[in-house]
Length: 596
Image 1 (cartoon, helix red, strand yellow):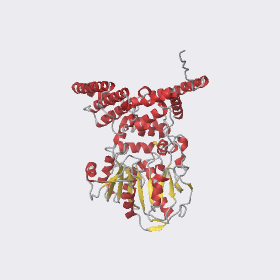
Image 2 (image 1 turned 135 degrees about the horizontal axis):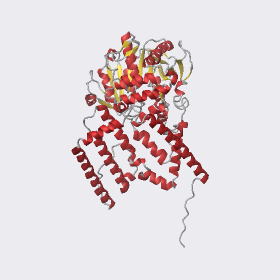
Image 3 (image 1 turned 30 degrees about the vertical axis):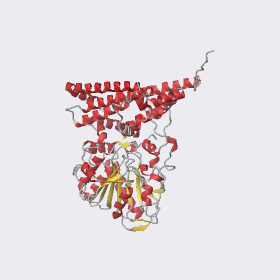
Image 4 (image 1 turned 45 degrees about the vertical axis):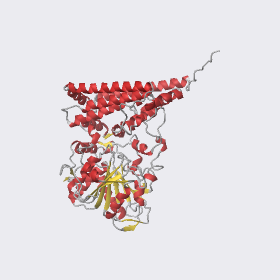
């Protein structure tokens, strides 16, 4: 008698399947309505179509070159076909093309060991190389259009990777067979959850949001809020040493995201470490602005965010002089403020450190593809409706800079494999978006990114004072990171040629966040320094003569700061001075969500 095989029992009842189907219908209808409305309002918000029309025109004007590229592609493809057939018959054959080092999309063993999936992988890599070379070979286009074509071609190529599709990803195929398709059902639920959370937009979940709470298990360094205004709360952290440096340390983080990247947990908190080094640490915690703050300007951010904070530090400590740290956009504001102070004779700041900060935006990296006039007009019109830019919109822009890591890896994990994302404090912070007030943000995008006026003497006027970075004569330390995709290190290096005073440049390994938050005692990444008295004009020349060191750059910076911190004084506790405690750190401003 033949053996009878029973079909696996469905993991969901008919009622549950019906409910899931109805939910899918409703959520997708909302999504399509939102997409249709956005398309009707602005069919090309990123101004891509015109760029690719120009690319096509450029290609057809040079048919010989296009034919040569096509011939080379087909030659490679036929070589791949021959190589794959040899492997199929058990004959060893070298790959025609391999993924770039560090490309984690093809880490599963079957991408190399299984002949079929290896063929799919190499076919994709060959096609991707051909498409990117075709985009790169265009002539006669302006630099901005060429950058846009290169960027969006890469976005297109990354989106079509076989790892992003269920039937061509070996890990997903195995999971589907092993779970009898439950991974895809769970993935559908995850997709619906993300669409509902995004209110008609796809808001990909990157971590377990319930695993973290600001002030409970991240941003927990003890301290107090000692001052606040419309734009900031000023945090003063509790000392951990009996004596401290006379001059306090004020940290100005970017308002494009939240300050607690410097205080995620005890083991990697820069704030905790600086406090343990005998610093009286103050940190600006920016408000998450709403429509009431739409008219706040870059000048307001300088006055209320920096100058008022310096006044408050003096009241809290009795010390007029201080040292500054500015991080990313907070560093750009810090540089502008120091130029303003130099022009007005304000000499309170005795040293400044810039973390991954752009002041010369000439080579500002991939973010410049979003800054042409058509896109800025579209953005300005959108912001005018509410008075601010949604935090999720800004987060999407930054995620696109590392789409494989910050978009497609989660598509595979959440929707195809049906897994929940791993609890990760850094990704929780990355998802904790902030809004951008209209007036300030448009000033920043136009005057810095589009017109690059900050490096031009008198190019920007703040509070009726034309500013010039060349007047900044205090000691400057510039910390950049080698793999930074937001503030490319070669662009940040340009600042070494600007300031009038002594400059120290440190290049850390890794990227915009990990390269900065690389705690003392860590063996990761390393850093480079140079003992040259005068820095060469080009970053490549500097790197050739620089010395590489192991571990964290934090102790190197600490030695530099020692010359500017003054003698030791008894430790200061929040509330001891003229400013009284308003609430416990991390304060209430940082807890406001962009979706609230």
